[in-house]
Image (cartoon, rainbow, N blue to C red; front, side, top):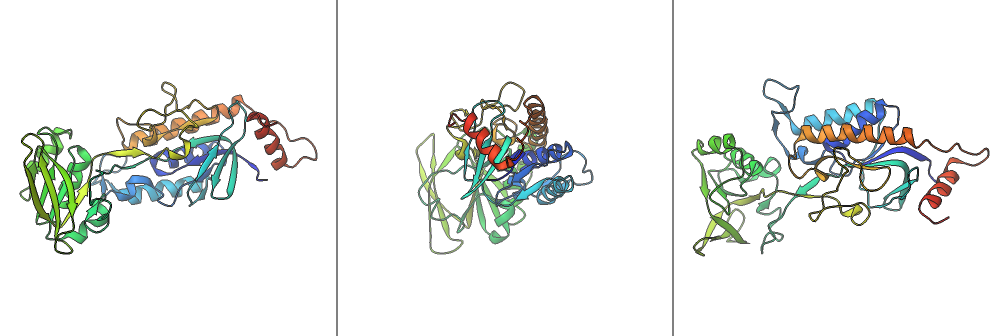
Length: 339
Protein backbone atom coordinates (compact mmCIF):
# COMPACT_ATOMS: atom_id res chain seq x y z
CA UNK A 1 0.00 0.00 0.00
CA UNK A 2 1.39 3.43 -0.99
CA UNK A 3 2.10 6.23 1.44
CA UNK A 4 -0.38 9.07 1.62
CA UNK A 5 0.46 12.27 -0.27
CA UNK A 6 -0.56 15.62 1.13
CA UNK A 7 -1.64 16.92 -2.28
CA UNK A 8 -2.03 15.21 -5.64
CA UNK A 9 -2.33 17.52 -8.63
CA UNK A 10 -3.88 16.03 -11.77
CA UNK A 11 -2.86 17.95 -14.87
CA UNK A 12 -0.35 20.62 -15.71
CA UNK A 13 -0.52 23.86 -17.63
CA UNK A 14 -0.50 27.24 -15.88
CA UNK A 15 -3.06 26.09 -13.29
CA UNK A 16 -1.39 22.80 -12.40
CA UNK A 17 2.15 24.10 -12.26
CA UNK A 18 1.23 27.22 -10.29
CA UNK A 19 -0.64 25.04 -7.80
CA UNK A 20 2.47 22.85 -7.59
CA UNK A 21 4.72 25.87 -6.97
CA UNK A 22 2.55 27.18 -4.15
CA UNK A 23 1.97 23.77 -2.59
CA UNK A 24 5.68 22.94 -2.75
CA UNK A 25 6.65 26.25 -1.14
CA UNK A 26 4.20 25.43 1.65
CA UNK A 27 6.25 22.25 2.22
CA UNK A 28 3.35 20.01 1.15
CA UNK A 29 5.57 18.04 -1.27
CA UNK A 30 2.89 17.80 -3.97
CA UNK A 31 2.76 14.94 -6.45
CA UNK A 32 1.88 16.14 -9.96
CA UNK A 33 0.44 13.67 -12.46
CA UNK A 34 1.07 15.99 -15.37
CA UNK A 35 -0.09 13.89 -18.31
CA UNK A 36 1.81 13.02 -21.48
CA UNK A 37 0.97 16.37 -23.12
CA UNK A 38 2.35 18.34 -20.17
CA UNK A 39 2.06 22.09 -20.33
CA UNK A 40 -1.44 22.13 -21.74
CA UNK A 41 -2.54 24.26 -24.67
CA UNK A 42 0.29 26.76 -24.21
CA UNK A 43 2.57 24.11 -25.68
CA UNK A 44 0.73 24.82 -28.93
CA UNK A 45 1.08 28.61 -28.73
CA UNK A 46 3.73 30.89 -30.20
CA UNK A 47 4.23 34.36 -28.71
CA UNK A 48 2.54 35.02 -25.36
CA UNK A 49 2.60 38.81 -25.15
CA UNK A 50 0.14 39.40 -22.32
CA UNK A 51 1.61 37.29 -19.50
CA UNK A 52 3.06 39.77 -16.97
CA UNK A 53 6.81 39.98 -16.60
CA UNK A 54 7.94 39.44 -20.19
CA UNK A 55 8.34 42.81 -21.96
CA UNK A 56 10.04 43.18 -25.32
CA UNK A 57 7.96 40.74 -27.35
CA UNK A 58 6.67 38.35 -24.69
CA UNK A 59 7.68 34.71 -24.41
CA UNK A 60 7.05 31.56 -26.39
CA UNK A 61 4.30 29.38 -24.91
CA UNK A 62 6.42 26.21 -24.62
CA UNK A 63 9.23 28.15 -22.94
CA UNK A 64 6.81 29.64 -20.40
CA UNK A 65 5.52 26.19 -19.50
CA UNK A 66 9.03 24.78 -19.26
CA UNK A 67 9.97 27.55 -16.82
CA UNK A 68 6.88 26.94 -14.68
CA UNK A 69 7.60 23.22 -14.67
CA UNK A 70 11.23 23.71 -13.62
CA UNK A 71 10.20 26.17 -10.92
CA UNK A 72 7.74 23.67 -9.44
CA UNK A 73 10.47 21.02 -9.36
CA UNK A 74 12.97 23.41 -7.77
CA UNK A 75 10.61 23.88 -4.82
CA UNK A 76 10.13 20.14 -4.39
CA UNK A 77 7.17 19.10 -6.54
CA UNK A 78 7.45 15.56 -7.91
CA UNK A 79 6.27 14.99 -11.47
CA UNK A 80 4.84 11.89 -13.10
CA UNK A 81 4.65 12.24 -16.89
CA UNK A 82 1.73 9.90 -17.33
CA UNK A 83 -2.04 10.04 -17.59
CA UNK A 84 -4.43 9.75 -14.65
CA UNK A 85 -7.01 7.17 -15.71
CA UNK A 86 -9.50 7.01 -12.82
CA UNK A 87 -10.28 8.44 -9.40
CA UNK A 88 -12.05 7.31 -6.23
CA UNK A 89 -12.82 10.15 -3.86
CA UNK A 90 -13.80 9.86 -0.21
CA UNK A 91 -16.95 11.82 0.65
CA UNK A 92 -16.04 12.94 4.18
CA UNK A 93 -13.61 15.64 5.36
CA UNK A 94 -10.28 14.09 6.26
CA UNK A 95 -10.85 11.11 3.98
CA UNK A 96 -8.23 9.60 1.73
CA UNK A 97 -8.64 9.96 -2.03
CA UNK A 98 -7.31 7.59 -4.68
CA UNK A 99 -5.95 8.51 -8.09
CA UNK A 100 -5.09 5.78 -10.58
CA UNK A 101 -2.50 5.78 -13.34
CA UNK A 102 -3.31 2.50 -15.05
CA UNK A 103 -2.87 -0.19 -12.42
CA UNK A 104 -0.81 2.08 -10.15
CA UNK A 105 -2.72 3.93 -7.42
CA UNK A 106 -1.76 7.02 -5.48
CA UNK A 107 -3.34 8.12 -2.21
CA UNK A 108 -3.84 11.74 -1.24
CA UNK A 109 -5.44 13.79 1.50
CA UNK A 110 -6.23 16.54 -1.00
CA UNK A 111 -6.54 16.54 -4.80
CA UNK A 112 -6.32 19.48 -7.19
CA UNK A 113 -7.93 18.96 -10.59
CA UNK A 114 -6.21 20.90 -13.39
CA UNK A 115 -6.78 18.80 -16.50
CA UNK A 116 -7.59 21.80 -18.66
CA UNK A 117 -9.52 21.73 -21.91
CA UNK A 118 -8.99 20.47 -25.44
CA UNK A 119 -9.98 21.75 -28.86
CA UNK A 120 -13.57 21.21 -29.96
CA UNK A 121 -14.27 19.30 -33.14
CA UNK A 122 -16.74 20.26 -35.86
CA UNK A 123 -18.10 16.73 -36.10
CA UNK A 124 -18.56 16.86 -39.87
CA UNK A 125 -17.83 14.07 -42.38
CA UNK A 126 -14.17 13.79 -43.30
CA UNK A 127 -12.89 15.69 -40.27
CA UNK A 128 -11.74 12.66 -38.30
CA UNK A 129 -10.54 10.82 -41.40
CA UNK A 130 -8.35 13.74 -42.49
CA UNK A 131 -7.10 14.72 -39.04
CA UNK A 132 -3.34 15.08 -39.36
CA UNK A 133 -3.62 14.82 -43.14
CA UNK A 134 -5.21 18.12 -44.05
CA UNK A 135 -7.26 18.95 -40.96
CA UNK A 136 -5.45 20.37 -37.92
CA UNK A 137 -6.21 22.04 -34.60
CA UNK A 138 -2.83 23.65 -33.97
CA UNK A 139 -1.37 26.24 -36.31
CA UNK A 140 1.86 26.39 -34.34
CA UNK A 141 2.35 22.68 -34.79
CA UNK A 142 1.41 22.29 -38.45
CA UNK A 143 1.62 25.63 -40.23
CA UNK A 144 4.96 24.87 -41.85
CA UNK A 145 3.41 21.94 -43.73
CA UNK A 146 1.14 24.31 -45.63
CA UNK A 147 3.58 26.82 -47.10
CA UNK A 148 2.19 28.56 -50.18
CA UNK A 149 -1.11 26.70 -49.83
CA UNK A 150 -4.68 27.94 -49.54
CA UNK A 151 -5.57 27.51 -45.87
CA UNK A 152 -9.04 27.47 -44.33
CA UNK A 153 -9.60 28.56 -40.72
CA UNK A 154 -12.94 27.83 -39.04
CA UNK A 155 -14.10 30.00 -36.13
CA UNK A 156 -14.94 33.54 -35.09
CA UNK A 157 -13.26 34.14 -31.74
CA UNK A 158 -9.85 35.44 -30.71
CA UNK A 159 -8.33 31.98 -31.06
CA UNK A 160 -9.51 31.67 -34.65
CA UNK A 161 -8.16 35.12 -35.52
CA UNK A 162 -4.85 34.39 -33.82
CA UNK A 163 -4.54 31.17 -35.82
CA UNK A 164 -5.52 32.89 -39.07
CA UNK A 165 -3.07 35.78 -38.60
CA UNK A 166 -0.26 33.36 -37.78
CA UNK A 167 -1.06 31.22 -40.82
CA UNK A 168 -0.80 34.18 -43.19
CA UNK A 169 2.97 33.93 -42.71
CA UNK A 170 2.85 30.53 -44.38
CA UNK A 171 -0.16 30.25 -46.67
CA UNK A 172 -0.55 32.00 -50.00
CA UNK A 173 -4.14 32.72 -49.03
CA UNK A 174 -5.96 32.27 -45.72
CA UNK A 175 -9.76 32.13 -45.62
CA UNK A 176 -11.54 32.51 -42.28
CA UNK A 177 -14.99 30.89 -42.29
CA UNK A 178 -17.59 31.83 -39.69
CA UNK A 179 -21.29 31.06 -39.39
CA UNK A 180 -22.21 34.67 -38.60
CA UNK A 181 -21.38 38.01 -40.17
CA UNK A 182 -20.30 39.31 -36.75
CA UNK A 183 -17.28 37.95 -34.92
CA UNK A 184 -16.81 37.14 -31.24
CA UNK A 185 -13.16 38.18 -31.45
CA UNK A 186 -11.98 41.41 -29.88
CA UNK A 187 -12.12 44.48 -32.11
CA UNK A 188 -8.34 44.86 -32.09
CA UNK A 189 -7.92 41.32 -33.43
CA UNK A 190 -10.50 41.87 -36.17
CA UNK A 191 -8.94 45.17 -37.19
CA UNK A 192 -5.48 43.62 -37.27
CA UNK A 193 -6.76 40.80 -39.48
CA UNK A 194 -8.49 43.15 -41.91
CA UNK A 195 -5.17 44.84 -42.63
CA UNK A 196 -3.53 41.61 -43.85
CA UNK A 197 -3.66 41.26 -47.63
CA UNK A 198 -3.72 37.47 -47.90
CA UNK A 199 -6.41 37.02 -45.22
CA UNK A 200 -10.05 37.10 -46.25
CA UNK A 201 -13.39 36.39 -44.59
CA UNK A 202 -16.17 34.09 -45.75
CA UNK A 203 -19.43 34.65 -43.84
CA UNK A 204 -22.03 33.47 -43.02
CA UNK A 205 -20.85 29.97 -43.95
CA UNK A 206 -20.42 26.63 -42.19
CA UNK A 207 -18.34 23.61 -43.16
CA UNK A 208 -20.51 20.66 -44.16
CA UNK A 209 -17.72 18.20 -44.96
CA UNK A 210 -14.06 17.76 -45.79
CA UNK A 211 -13.17 15.71 -48.87
CA UNK A 212 -9.86 14.12 -49.82
CA UNK A 213 -9.57 15.78 -53.22
CA UNK A 214 -7.01 14.66 -55.78
CA UNK A 215 -4.13 14.20 -53.35
CA UNK A 216 -2.06 15.86 -50.62
CA UNK A 217 -2.73 19.61 -50.41
CA UNK A 218 -5.71 19.10 -52.70
CA UNK A 219 -8.35 18.79 -49.99
CA UNK A 220 -11.84 20.11 -50.57
CA UNK A 221 -14.04 21.92 -48.06
CA UNK A 222 -17.77 21.79 -48.74
CA UNK A 223 -19.28 25.02 -47.46
CA UNK A 224 -22.89 26.09 -47.00
CA UNK A 225 -24.26 29.61 -46.77
CA UNK A 226 -26.51 29.56 -43.69
CA UNK A 227 -28.74 32.31 -45.07
CA UNK A 228 -29.25 31.21 -48.67
CA UNK A 229 -28.54 27.49 -48.39
CA UNK A 230 -26.08 27.76 -51.28
CA UNK A 231 -23.42 25.02 -51.25
CA UNK A 232 -19.98 25.35 -52.79
CA UNK A 233 -16.79 23.34 -52.78
CA UNK A 234 -13.50 25.11 -52.13
CA UNK A 235 -10.15 23.51 -52.95
CA UNK A 236 -7.71 24.04 -50.10
CA UNK A 237 -4.33 22.84 -48.96
CA UNK A 238 -5.59 22.28 -45.44
CA UNK A 239 -7.94 23.44 -42.70
CA UNK A 240 -7.47 24.56 -39.11
CA UNK A 241 -10.37 24.27 -36.66
CA UNK A 242 -10.55 26.95 -33.95
CA UNK A 243 -14.06 26.83 -32.48
CA UNK A 244 -13.43 26.52 -28.78
CA UNK A 245 -12.56 23.94 -26.17
CA UNK A 246 -13.96 21.01 -24.23
CA UNK A 247 -13.09 20.56 -20.54
CA UNK A 248 -11.15 17.36 -19.89
CA UNK A 249 -13.34 16.20 -17.03
CA UNK A 250 -14.07 12.64 -18.14
CA UNK A 251 -12.30 10.90 -15.27
CA UNK A 252 -14.25 12.89 -12.66
CA UNK A 253 -17.64 12.82 -14.40
CA UNK A 254 -20.23 11.63 -11.91
CA UNK A 255 -17.68 11.95 -9.09
CA UNK A 256 -17.56 15.72 -8.74
CA UNK A 257 -20.31 18.08 -9.83
CA UNK A 258 -20.05 19.47 -13.37
CA UNK A 259 -22.27 21.69 -15.48
CA UNK A 260 -24.07 20.64 -18.65
CA UNK A 261 -20.92 21.19 -20.74
CA UNK A 262 -18.62 19.26 -18.42
CA UNK A 263 -16.96 22.19 -16.65
CA UNK A 264 -16.27 21.37 -13.00
CA UNK A 265 -18.33 23.46 -10.60
CA UNK A 266 -16.70 25.20 -7.65
CA UNK A 267 -18.13 26.98 -4.62
CA UNK A 268 -18.35 30.76 -5.07
CA UNK A 269 -14.96 32.45 -5.44
CA UNK A 270 -13.12 29.41 -4.09
CA UNK A 271 -11.77 26.37 -5.93
CA UNK A 272 -13.64 23.90 -3.70
CA UNK A 273 -15.70 21.26 -5.49
CA UNK A 274 -18.65 19.48 -3.89
CA UNK A 275 -16.27 16.76 -2.64
CA UNK A 276 -14.35 17.60 0.56
CA UNK A 277 -10.63 17.89 -0.10
CA UNK A 278 -11.00 18.07 -3.89
CA UNK A 279 -10.31 21.37 -5.66
CA UNK A 280 -10.38 22.45 -9.30
CA UNK A 281 -8.66 25.21 -11.26
CA UNK A 282 -7.93 26.55 -14.72
CA UNK A 283 -9.73 25.86 -17.99
CA UNK A 284 -11.39 22.83 -16.40
CA UNK A 285 -13.49 25.36 -14.47
CA UNK A 286 -13.24 28.59 -16.44
CA UNK A 287 -15.55 28.79 -19.44
CA UNK A 288 -15.34 32.59 -19.69
CA UNK A 289 -11.77 33.89 -19.62
CA UNK A 290 -9.54 30.91 -20.48
CA UNK A 291 -6.30 32.87 -20.21
CA UNK A 292 -2.93 31.69 -18.97
CA UNK A 293 -2.86 34.34 -16.27
CA UNK A 294 -6.35 33.53 -14.96
CA UNK A 295 -5.52 29.82 -14.94
CA UNK A 296 -2.34 30.53 -12.98
CA UNK A 297 -4.30 32.64 -10.52
CA UNK A 298 -6.78 29.83 -9.99
CA UNK A 299 -3.91 27.39 -9.50
CA UNK A 300 -2.62 29.64 -6.71
CA UNK A 301 -6.09 29.72 -5.13
CA UNK A 302 -6.41 25.93 -5.36
CA UNK A 303 -3.09 25.39 -3.58
CA UNK A 304 -4.07 27.80 -0.82
CA UNK A 305 -7.51 26.21 -0.48
CA UNK A 306 -5.86 22.79 -0.24
CA UNK A 307 -3.36 24.05 2.36
CA UNK A 308 -6.15 25.49 4.50
CA UNK A 309 -8.18 22.31 4.13
CA UNK A 310 -5.24 20.22 5.35
CA UNK A 311 -4.72 22.62 8.24
CA UNK A 312 -8.35 22.28 9.30
CA UNK A 313 -8.39 18.50 8.82
CA UNK A 314 -5.12 17.36 10.40
CA UNK A 315 -3.77 13.92 9.61
CA UNK A 316 -4.54 11.24 12.17
CA UNK A 317 -1.27 10.19 13.86
CA UNK A 318 0.02 6.82 12.72
CA UNK A 319 -0.55 4.27 15.53
CA UNK A 320 2.65 2.70 16.79
CA UNK A 321 3.50 -0.33 14.69
CA UNK A 322 1.03 0.44 11.88
CA UNK A 323 2.68 1.27 8.52
CA UNK A 324 1.48 4.46 6.86
CA UNK A 325 0.01 2.45 4.02
CA UNK A 326 -2.15 0.39 6.38
CA UNK A 327 -3.37 3.58 8.04
CA UNK A 328 -4.26 5.00 4.62
CA UNK A 329 -6.24 1.88 3.78
CA UNK A 330 -8.13 2.10 7.06
CA UNK A 331 -8.79 5.82 6.63
CA UNK A 332 -9.99 5.43 3.04
CA UNK A 333 -12.25 2.51 3.90
CA UNK A 334 -13.76 4.45 6.78
CA UNK A 335 -14.29 7.65 4.84
CA UNK A 336 -15.76 5.85 1.82
CA UNK A 337 -18.14 3.75 3.87
CA UNK A 338 -16.38 0.43 3.25
CA UNK A 339 -15.31 -0.13 6.86
